Length: 163
Image (cartoon, rainbow, N blue to C red; front, side):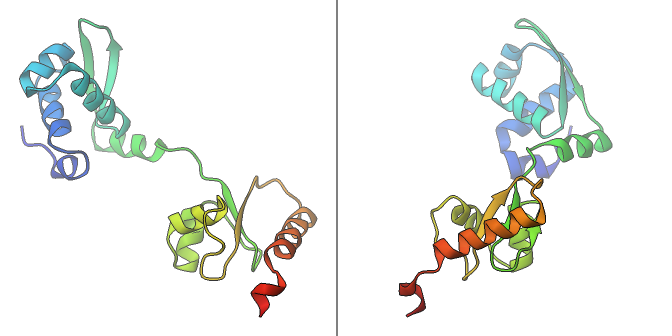
């Protein structure tokens, strides 16, 4: 069985080796997977969890002595990968009042890194290229958003900054 190169590049040889064993033998004990791949049982468990998270397999029954794994086809993989992750918090740009669905969307718009926006929101950075951001729930009215912007701007702009 030839393993997809993307598994090796993104998740390493161990995960790829475990995947190859599961494809060859869908009903196999974790201890046998560990022995086949020359890894510990705990490492095999982590690799199986990774494969399930990224949508390459589905663990059908999780019994200590025997597990059954279903190898997912491409469309099932894509669907699984789309569901991974939690929804990002909405981001409000204080400077211009624009609202974004996530840090990533805001970062793309302003051509900055997602981590810079995240760090600024969490108080680790003062601003990102002169821009100020905050998280919002998305249920605020226009007046509430305006109040949030004005409070934030009054706190962040001091006389020392203007000199």
